[in-house]
Length: 222
Image 1 (cartoon, rainbow, N blue to C red):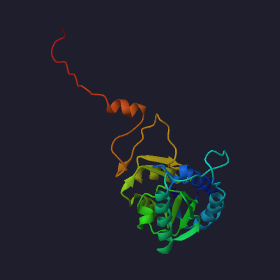
Image 2: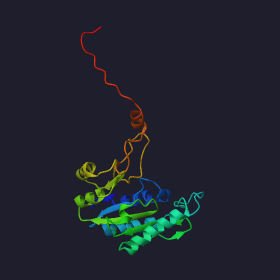
Image 3: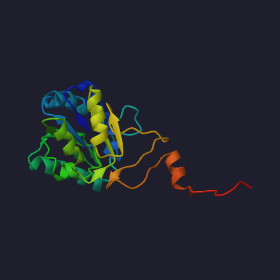
Image 4: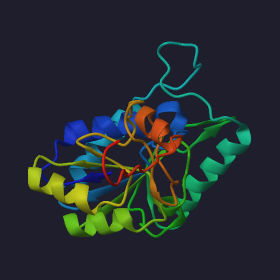
């Protein structure tokens, strides 16, 4: 997800707080990498951290709970280790990353090297990596510098910037002013690069299972 200087910071941080941690981050299109223009990075983090710290953890059967456990304690240990290793490698764990059994508290990790494992590998857990970029071109280059290409989002109030993002971001699903964590069944849904071949979705699925014939009639009519 890219956040440009003209973005609505309140909207962007609310979207990350929802899209990065739902289902404990165990969603293939959850927000994992956020690339923020360095001119608004401090404002973005100041707004994001309190929202993430306010995410209620607990029993999934409780209506007030917004974050429960990972699928197993082994997965929780893996996620906890990834967050801790990122912090030991120069990134800044601003909040979260603590583990209690199979539950990992929602983490915001800033100053993440875009080439580090914490940015390049799929975390599949409740942690978001925040990196900075000097301008839009650099942000898009960072976004594309990964083997995956399933979903992306960009926050901007500039139509030209949104169009540029549509054309240049290498992802199968691109959202303007929301996170990748949104889909409808009727949409063509699928990724580029290492994120799969083909599309899901009603029309796409029918097309995938349809054998097409080309019929050409030559000569005089019957």
